[in-house]
Image (tube, rainbow, N blue to C red; front, side, top):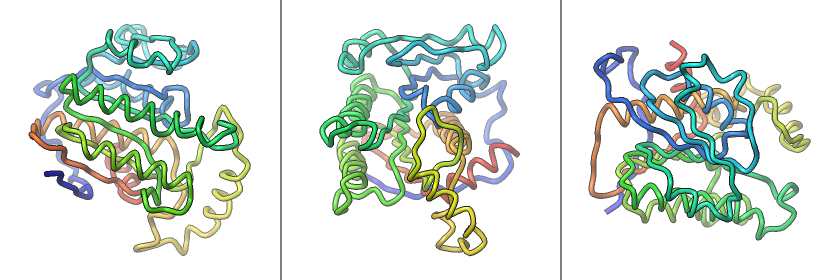
Length: 259
């Protein structure tokens, strides 16, 4: 039986002190994107994270990631994502983070889009299942639904449904609205939409708050925080506990992280 929940943001007290807390190893795929690059910086600098393995399609620079000692826990594997399963044979991780995502414009075809936004993330979720990882953390999108008439939202929803059928103790699904931040790829449609939304933020309160645009860095902060909490709570389960973080809850969690 699958369980679903929305996230409850904790109060300001830490449940476990850092020097008593459980450290964990992390796998991150999607580290060169807006959210992924910010998340990598968070993981590298987090004393609770003992090792960070990154699987990427192209070499990455590490000059802004942290100190020499912090960067010493980073392992970078450069490979084609079509060989993802083979690369994963060399990896062990307690928490698996997936921040992969593209657009139809960049992918060129629906088939290519589906490969990046459905097939690769699902392969990572299956890896988490078969290696008994404690947490699988993934970014989908606001409005993701397998019943959506919009192809983008439907694929994201189908991914959520497929992951829910697996047996992973904790699955954390982040559903941000329009993302703010500097991207490697220019997305004019998203930029225009974010600009309009920013101008209307004063009206986005209550139930409408989840539609506010959000910084990619804040999504990364929330993902790191939620994973830490799940590991420290040690909520082992024989079935998958699905936690959904809409954009307003992501913002609350990121704000709490920054204290």
